[in-house]
Image (cartoon, rainbow, N blue to C red):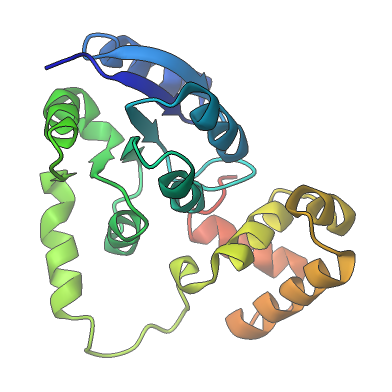
Length: 215
């Protein structure tokens, strides 16, 4: 197999350093980034064959970054490498265009197989979550979820929610997302209404509980 050019994205520098040693045995690491917006910029500049990315990243989470990456660099394969084992996140990852999904605890043992599988044009899902995902699909029409999952929000709502939870002010969010202040305020209000929350602190707690941001 030709050694793929790989771009890595994770917000923890120690995790990146450790993973890089593993990845360099399998391909050429052309860059590392620690937030979702830098990932979009570097992916367009470097045009890698493969992107390894986490879900929880500052400024723009991995799921919404992936949704943009499949349009900006459609030639790049995407593998999520994350701590999240929730079937909701796994299903959403493949829905937005991922070719692979790995859990960090099993990365060393499975990384080579995952990269080889994905570079052949196939999909790879870590066995530790496959059963849970299938079980969720079978039960998807039974019962109801008491709390709306973050994946049910629109991409714009998630962007605004993440930046609010990271402590960004309304003006800063408006500037970063190229929106008016009134539009950002509208999204904040709609988020509270749809999630049944009543304050910014509630929004932050929700974002943390859903894994959109970390403490």
